[in-house]
Amino acid sequence: MIFRISDNILSPLGETTKENYQAVRDGRSMLCRYDAYPGIPQPFTASLFSDEQNRLMASAGLTRFESLAYASASRAIRESGIDPGSSRVVFILSTTKGNVELISQGPSDESILYPCTAAQHIAQRLGITTVPITVCNACISGVSAMVLALRLLEAGTYDYAVVCGADTQCQFTISGFQSLKAVSESQCRPFDIERLGMNLGEAAATIVFARQSEGDAWAVQSGAVRNDAFHISSPSKNGEGARLTIDAITSEGDIQKLAFVNAHGTATLFNDQMESIAIERAGLQGVPVNALKGYYGHTLGAAGILETILSMASVDDHCILGTRGFTEIGVSGQIKVSSENIPTSKQSFIKMISGFGGCNAAVLVTKDAEPVYECKPSPRLETKHHVRITPTQVLVDGNEIAFEGEGKSMLTNIYKRRINNYPKFYKMDSLSRLGFVASELLLEAEGRHPDSSSSDRAVILFNHSSSVQADKAFQASIQDPADYFPSPAAFVYTLPNIVAGEISIRNHYQGETSFYVLPAKDERLMELIINATFGDKHTRSVLGGWLDYKDDARFEADLFIVENQTL
Image (cartoon, rainbow, N blue to C red; front, top):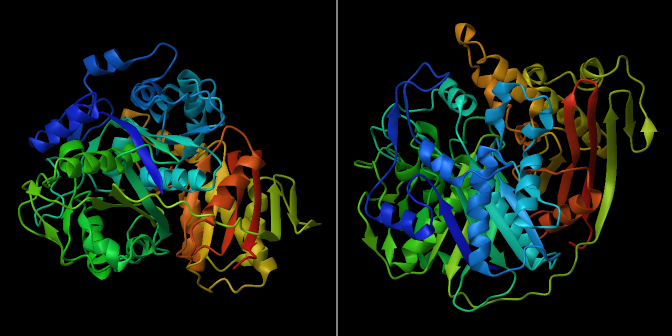
């Protein structure tokens, strides 16, 4: 359990949590239709910052994205009263694409496109001295970041966590979601029978968490991440991954105390249907459900944090916020949705969310919870197998394996000679191919049949360059207005966590999948995060490690299987 000591929301609706909450309570939104957006031939509806708002929050030496995140985080830190320079403070940035809007300019230093670079710039400006951690877990990044904060603080690694989620929109992201036929030209209608798709939005949201309670406080009581192991861009039809997250964080007693479930509610056909099934299967059909995308659109890496903050504010106001755009139920799962604000006296809620790569996450958030300080034994971990792949070498448990070719061709040769039964390999981007081959060699060394399933194995991956190769490939498809052809398949792979999803789908893993981007290959920090993953009592082993693919001549897989021997 960790405790909220301050927060901030910065969006087109306002600069503070109070301004944003009042706007939403009043039913206001900044969603509007854009018929002539640079580089986008089709109309769309979104909630974007105005030129004046961008000017006011700009910080010299920071990009637009970095300025947005810094503005929100600095306000939350000031309100919290913590010393950001303390070695007991960690900065966790949640984002899907960071500075990707700069990719169209062809920056001379591509490292500006790495989310960890933005995290470093923001952390330095905030005065934070510890190594920042960037969570790149698709749309669930914000909730994933809160789960990571929960684990690191409960483990005693830090005393405070500044968790900031942010994303901006640009030709890259808008065209990508349009290529998936997921974007509505009109304002979105979550869970409604007439829903036509999602709207996108810009925002930053920050929560400062403390390890110990500092009076009357909101607490993240529990959190979990699970994978559907179904498809990289379509959610499981039976909502299995989402249901597993809810089951992992709640007991029967918790369910009775819930004011509501704040759903992802993107207003896409498949997401809303899946969530309704998952909520019903988790036994929550009697609990009110709401969604906030009708006010902000989908703010990507900010969504999980922004919507958690608003949900806390609404419970403080004894109010369940209405689902803007909803009129008539249009999903088969038995859920209770209302467009009107409803009073409540209960003081806890679930925030659930899902994303590409089959990932799902949820947190149970409670007001005035009795602090529980458990003395959890440190897991006794044992590394079972290890694989390292570079452009010129393949090592399995320290033994060199000979293969033809170098670089990218070597990966294809390994696939043909040692695997060769998963044709989807040829559709993957380079990062996913590298992770897939390395994981197959690991599982071969383990002696486990590739079709065996597991709900207690997590896939936890780290790198430095995120999905830069796939980003550049997708940008090439939209760079020339005369040759504009955004590919949905190419866009999906611009999310680095997709490789974890590919490994999970291949092996039917329904445990946690998480992807972190770090300033460098920091084995100490990686070990801290992996050790903290075992704070989820359902996780018994981790397939994880370093997986970076800058280009065909610079890549490295350094993966291992580690098991908890204390269970």
